Length: 133
Image (cartoon, rainbow, N blue to C red; front, side, top):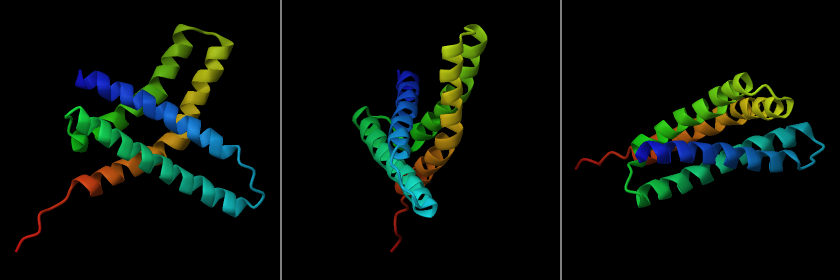
């Protein structure tokens, strides 16, 4: 059951960050520097929102967020990078090939940065050491 929840949350993460980053990409900003800053700040905000949402869901399901968020990140890369390639091989359709290519690009472009931010947040927010003395 826990593996199913991890895979389901990784698919949800892929859809979540792709949807929001496409919305952010549609905002027209003429200055390239400001556009780049807004783009990366929005990726950090999306990653933070998703981290706290998935941590809340895992805590309600009595799963350890410290452990399973890392599994979710790995499953997200597998779902976003390997599954579309298998779909292209199994079903050689032009529309499916375009969709699979967009999934791979989204995983590479958004997924690496967003999953890195999620891992950093998970490391710093779940590894709290008790203060001695």
